[in-house]
Length: 388
Image (cartoon, rainbow, N blue to C red; front, side, top):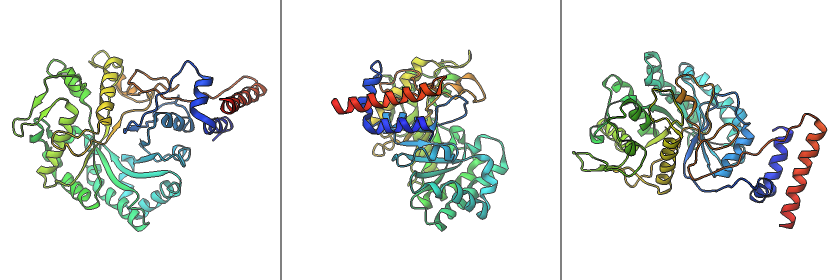
């Protein structure tokens, strides 16, 4: 934590809500328990420091964060914040993680030192491995998951940290109607072992589900209201007579039925990524701020209601929204760089009914002015706290 970040930490501790309205009267903060997780991607060169991001997330009352690595520069600033972290092992590490010694070294260096202060609850071993035609990685995935889990057991950490991996919906051969959900046949041998692993260690099956892709690929055949959680006629599953008023829930249930088709009924499906881009290329139909606001805003309302899917009505869906910030260095089409709820300066990309606060760092061309401005802010904050 640098000096200015430290000053803002002190100011935050004095009285966040009073300070905010006193110094920034043109902004408003609505603090809600969103009940939602957030993906904190960092493929960008203009993001705020993790210390400042921790303030933003606390102002939003978001207490669950998913990373794509195990970056100490993020984990340390979130010490003692009561934020639950999912950390990631990239696909490039899969082969190494099949080696017990290398797996133990990674856990001891990247996980164990931070557990006393930062709440790491889950490790995702690989991300969307079956999306890529790398059969060696397909073969390494389960052994890597097992080796990381066994390492946690040996270190006495398995009750604290679970092990899983995240899949794209490309693993499904059939997704509609949901009751016909089935995995791709070429993945059967791999997924069978992975499902047995989940059942044995009681860890969740994660999916990255994006109704946006279905709409983009077939805007004339897919109802926009259906994918945006807007009022619509819905669709009926003819085998179960269950009605679906949105595509995301249908996708989740299709995965549940595919898992059931492989003989498992005790594995929970969670959504590790879902979102909607606010901008895209000309051929990326539907990528607008309005649609992104509707998708994520309506999704948050469903999460607040603790809804389950039609097939699993008593199990509220566990969802991580993608993503916290727009990431300007992500490759691919324009949409890939425009999934964020916030711009890097902390302003919302669109309105979803909540607003957070990213504290400003005060800089000046003259160092003496730095000290004067920062001290002035601190004095003002203390005075307001004392007298109001």
